[in-house]
Image (cartoon, rainbow, N blue to C red; front, side):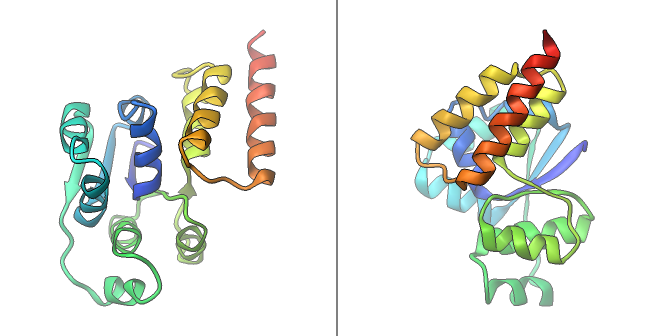
Length: 166
């Protein structure tokens, strides 16, 4: 995956870890819709500077469409715009909320989340598995939510990746 569309949650988790630039190490370009930027800047006014400094994140303004309006009936605006953008550009999406992920999958999008992003970083030799695990644990401490089942699966994968490095 060279280009991906991102929703808000993974960006918030990365900002909490002061690691927005990790996106640029894993992807050539990250597209975020204006509504996602608005959600981010409402929670952290400094994030716009960090996004601009990253150099690989592009803000996209979407025109109203039937697809967007339909998605807004069941999702928040950021998720609706992110899924619409991914559909319009036929790109994978970085999205963590269960309902948004489910809808993205129903629409046949390639979906990953924050834990998957960390795993991609490990597989691209951007992060050591132990660092990825620490980042996931810190994100959870910061308020990122992940099911126990997924946490165990991801942790086991990081451990397997660590063993393969030895």
